[in-house]
Length: 246
Ligand SMILES: [Zn+2]
Image 1 (cartoon, helix red, strand yellow):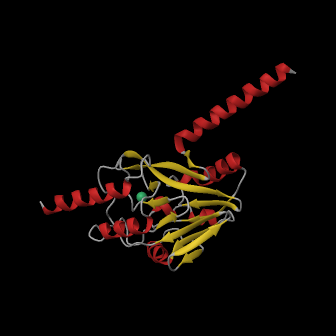
Image 2 (cartoon, rainbow, N blue to C red; image 1 turned 30 degrees about the vertical axis):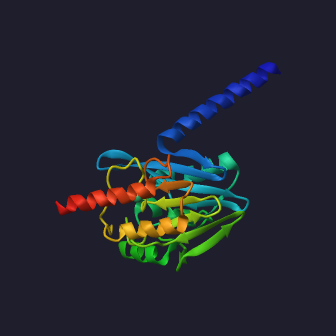
Image 3 (spheres, rainbow, N blue to C red; image 1 turned 90 degrees about the horizontal axis):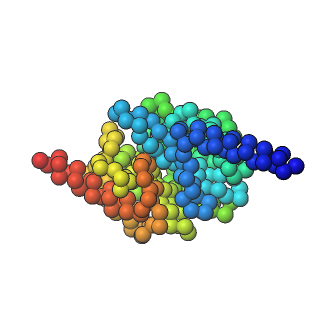
């Protein structure tokens, strides 16, 4: 009997180990706090492997997913990992702007019995560009409730794109910023192909006014290890504008 148990233990240890390995190479899941988890996938950007963050939130009414994986091979592995880890299904997915590191999985998730959402503004851009679109459209700032968690989809203005929204969990003081907010690890503003750098500072100020001092700020890319990303984004914008004037 003891032998059987040890055999079972070593087997489960091995399978955990190998599962962990495949996971860490393409999909990384990190607990932020309590019901809140950050998932990260990677894509090659300018020849360098670059990470993109999304978040998921456990509720007693299913899992809320914010944005979809950038790595398109990870749509189903993410759902599988969440089910294995928490024994819960994703029931709702909101994409925070029209770029592929946010919206790539919307159509796929729609086929997996997940209610998918973007703002109307995001949908208009995705429609023109022929990119994946959500089933449900948000027409103005909206407070949603899923299970025990409440959050607001908030549009503060243009920045990284004209349509970028943030998700604000007021009670937990968690600001999910997406690509509108740059990590303190970022050295520049990144992809500016659809950006409005002139309007961006005012947009950040409106978020600061609304959210005060968030406990956690989650940027679209790179580290979320501190809550200084709003200030850092303002600094990067200032730096960019100074360089433009030269
Ligand atoms: Zn992005």
